[in-house]
Image (cartoon, rainbow, N blue to C red; front, side, top):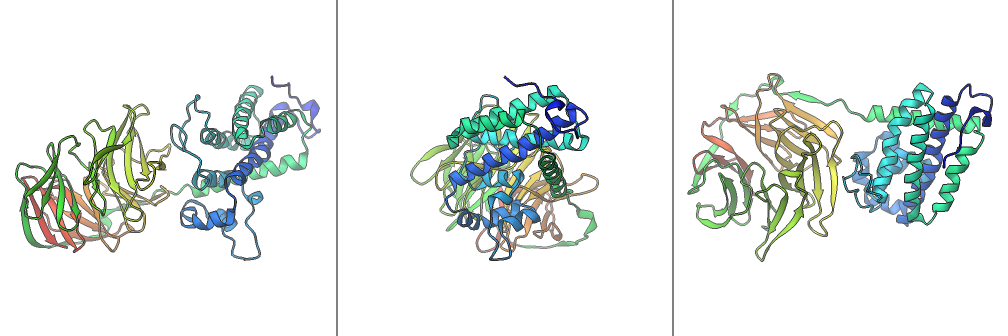
Length: 479
């Protein structure tokens, strides 16, 4: 049971209990939670410097400037020390390099009460930062709110402490802080740390860079049509992927099939969703495709077909692609229980099918994602017809830029990227242009229109551009 707190147990600086509550909660968060999270990292990582160097590229993408200085100091004499890291940075390390399994609802989401995994408990402590930020500026918190937050944090601290075999130690630390006379200098330091963390988080929230296509006029340019492939019994070709040494997987109305470059049928898949961004192909020719019910992904090799991702009925899969850099599977999902909230998830298909959530923010950036691809620089590109925009985030899921028009007349469809990191986007409106943007979102080319063009597009290793049409054909251009 929680004991009664009151200003009588503290120094004279506290004019009321509500002020003391804020300071006591700040100390719990900064000192005890921080100490516990550092202990978890030490338990899971034997050589911190080695692990940081291994994940340097990922961490430098995720961290802000001050965090990068702590992890990767310029001076060789300065050692990286967990004691120098605040809770925000500790959370980044725990989530990304410690091998902690994602909570049931994924990282960064509201966790289920029944999920007592270490990942879920760490995430709950992270969420409580917003409560502390708000009350640290106000300077007060009422007793009922204080008691609720204290109990909540204590429960999660104890659950995390089970991993370190130190439950009794941390229970005693929490109870001692609850009862003790607060030290004014220590309290001031903790309060300053909390406020600094909040200010840094505000600086990290990038204002979304919107690039309007009208601001860069590029006249239409022609491309040389090399040939046209006829695909019998397949209309509205909405997705295409090239397979070495010379075949295509193509999807149209109700059908997913593999053809040679003359249009001859090689094989057909009958249980695939045949819609936008519904399949992807690896370099060795393995096919990954979304099942018709949108809840699973299957892998088809030359030997067998197996289900590798199977999601609950309330989570639907919108589109997929294969990472160019690591060969991982990128998946856009939608949770229909959470006002159609979307995620971009990276699945490891080379080892076990574990996953890392890349884009999963409270301000869901997507409305109706149709296609996804990964650029050579690691950026993740999504064509979103609900937003009439192409949305680009970096490999850590942080916003880079959004491409759209001021009149919302842009309808982005099929996507591809070339060897130079340019992004190709098929326009789905009457114009049916193919737009080419550089990796920073600047329009560089506008390939001439064709009226019966549809949405599917891909490039092969010889820079041939394949574009699907409405009526059972694929145009092959010299790009």
